Image 1: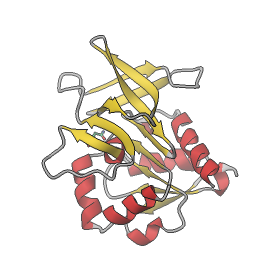
Image 2: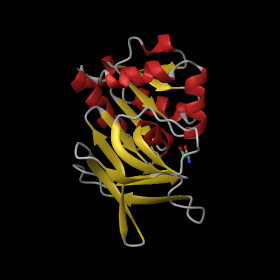
Image 3: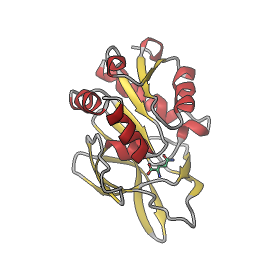
Image 4: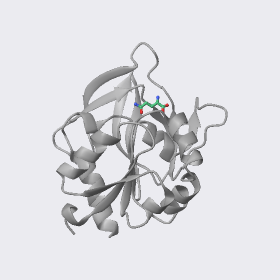
Length: 201
Ligand code: GLN
């Protein structure tokens, strides 16, 4: 199956929806903005963009999308979450708001706004599993991963103060990055996601 025949959703309730749409379309996929439960039908994968995870969580519930999307993920719908999207796909959050929920699916604990106020936005070249050229990782008030379950593959890590933290992970058909590849013009993460979607048919 080629990317051109793939139909993927981009969750379009808040955040940098447009950038993900452009990245996916540049790879030949057909993109469906998802705001209503019915729009989940017929998509083969979904991207959950960066933005503000607390707001996306509230809007998912307000739009009656939270439960259907969670059910679709549990049934195996491939998903890629960037930044706030990584938080939404994490099973556990540190420093979430009191009522914040996640869709879950990836057996990780993420720390929200992990890099702190001093360095809340920065970029760095990082090694990425299986790639010869590094990825330019743009972090914007990003989470990092504090704990990973046995099923989780760590694809990239960042070192802060001598301690490394995973910032790209995969568990089955679920992929997540703390950083924002959609703003760099390097679409290898989106291509990897479309390869996962194609594999799952
Ligand atoms: N800090 C945001 C949150 O908690 C994530 C930031 C982003 O997606 N760029 O959701």
